[in-house]
Amino acid sequence: MRIFIAALIMMYVTGFAQAQDKPLVQFSGIIYNVDSNVVVPYVTVTNKNKSNRTVSANFQGYFSFVAAQGDTILFSAVGYRREALVIPDMEGEKSYTVVVKMKPVVVNLPMVSVLPWASVDEFTKEFMSMKFADDDLEIAKKNVARSSLLAMARDLPRDGQEMRGVNFQNNHIALTNKAINQRMANPLLNPFAWGSFIQQIINGDKSKSN
Picture (spheres, rainbow, N blue to C red):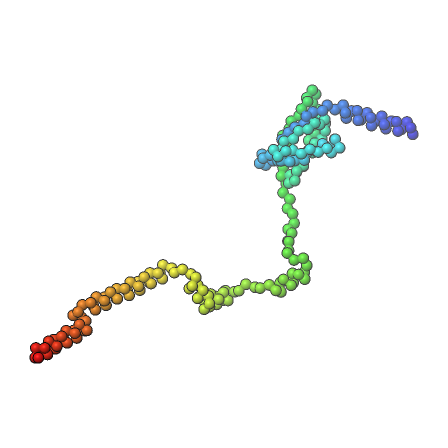
């Protein structure tokens, strides 16, 4: 039993030593949208060989961290399909730069209807007290009601046709008054002037006879 446990410990130490013997590289890159070539910001980058250690790309889609050759890197973002790659073995290289292209995924969610009522009883109460809109006939009756017409006559400004009629009527009255005044100013057309003239003639004849 002790020999078996010792063998397991030796295998674990050997595997751990081999894992630690993998050369480290500075893993960097930038992430694009494969359809539009626009950068994908804030993508989560996970190293599956380092206890799922994660880093985030910046708002320009750029990332950079230390990893080992042979590590599996997973890229994930909301609305995009997951992408994965393995850092290849490169002898003598200290850095590895990639361009990652992620494909957008459209997810159709089921329709959700949000109602403003907390329960069926509240909905029934609101429905029973709801006031329906007037139909066309009722709207027409309200428009020709006496109160509505008086309100519109008081508040609405006059249009061009109405102002033209009022101006024409005012001009007609002014011209009529002017003609009457001119006619009354002529003494030959004034009956009172004729009466005064005849009275003066009669008075003149009486003075002569006296």
